[in-house]
Image (cartoon, rainbow over all chains, first blue to last red; front, side, top):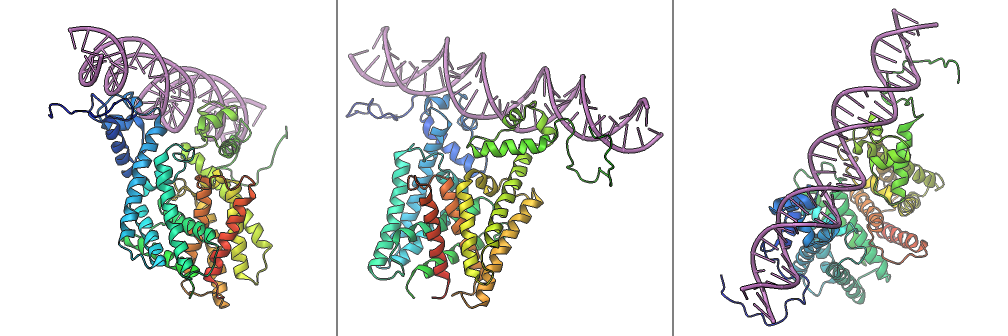
Amino acid sequence: MTPKTPKPRARRQAPEVRPYHHGDLRRVLIDAALHLAAEGAEVSVREAARRAAVSPGAPFRHFPNRDALMVAVAEEAQRRFRAEIEAALSQAPATDPLGRFRAFGLAYLRWAMRNPTHFEIISTGRYFAHGSSAALTRDNAELIALSEQMLAEAAQQGLLLSADLKRIQIAGRALVYGFARMNLDGHFPRWGVAEGEIERMAEGVIDLFIAGIAKP
Amino acid sequence: MTPKTPKPRARRQAPEVRPYHHGDLRRVLIDAALHLAAEGAEVSVREAARRAAVSPGAPFRHFPNRDALMVAVAEEAQRRFRAEIEAALSQAPATDPLGRFRAFGLAYLRWAMRNPTHFEIISTGRYFAHGSSAALTRDNAELIALSEQMLAEAAQQGLLLSADLKRIQIAGRALVYGFARMNLDGHFPRWGVAEGEIERMAEGVIDLFIAGIAKP
DNA sequence: TCCAAAATGTAATCGGCGATTACATGCAGG
DNA sequence: CCTGCATGTAATCGCCGATTACATTTTGGA
């Protein structure tokens, strides 16, 4: 519609600009894959292509293989995950590091409970383990640094029983990660027909952990 | 070779007796699948058949589909897992419930660290979630009951801070489950070239948890 | 003892998937 | 305008799970 866009710089520099024929097939494929995952279906390149109304070979113009598509999907999911956690933290008072830690864990688990298949794609190592994606690595490191920072502040204010912050951080991470994975792996059979039941249990578990590391 | 084996009872009762031609193809297929998993390879029915030197269709005489094979594999892995934990517990003094709890967690994580792909098959819900296997359900319930029992004894001896045993049990489960999954999902990048590093961290995390729930 | 039936294995085949190749199309800029 | 590259298609390959028709071996009872 716009007659001419004056492009201020070379267009061959960035490797992922926009496709020509389809509009933005890359984006559409990622969205299709996200929806497939959200529906609990297997994410296949062919099905994503089908949803994009495109031939089975077309996706391979944008992704060298299936894993590359999944990495892009993981990047998007991780971005949403991080955004939701940071939004929750932005409403927690900066002066209460353990309260922030609690809000962090709560937001983490809430998102993981409500987006289990997306959480699985983020967490299942296959797509980030080999340094596949700088964005993925960065977002993840950011979250870890955030939690370390909160613990450091708590320690500085003399709120913690132990001085081994690394150990506390790993334990806390394992706790929320384990709870999230237990949920998506089907280890919570029928408690939560009410759907809120599991989230209340998540809250209780986080509180138990914080009570365990905090000075009385 | 043996001329006649006097069979003392009807043979049509049990649905899984022994195969005829191959010796025990069912068993061989399960073992092949266990080895495939241990090698980090994808477990495919065809590859298991190849290793058993049998045609690609043969496995389907013993398993209605791939999932059924994986359930059998999960049963065997779960059996080993449980056996190792119970062996470790048999050496822990019965009078010290929290010490037993610690030994339990340690044995759990040791096995999960050393058999990550088998742990994954056990834990990944797909093979037990739909009540596929009574043995799997039973072994798992047994382990859960064991941990609940230890916590109940600890509470009875007045060793615990909180009386909410259910919450403690879920948190402890989530902690070890999360640590084990973080390991197999690739969330422990390069700490443990020495291999024992991660196990020492596992020990520290368990001790931190127990310190958090125990009266000082 | 022998034979019919059940149990087990094979060969051939189907559809779905990831991936590659040769070819077609359309947009961009010199 | 027209050449070249980015994008999409069609056809194909090999692997996988699964089914079917057929072959073979074991079993248990007549």
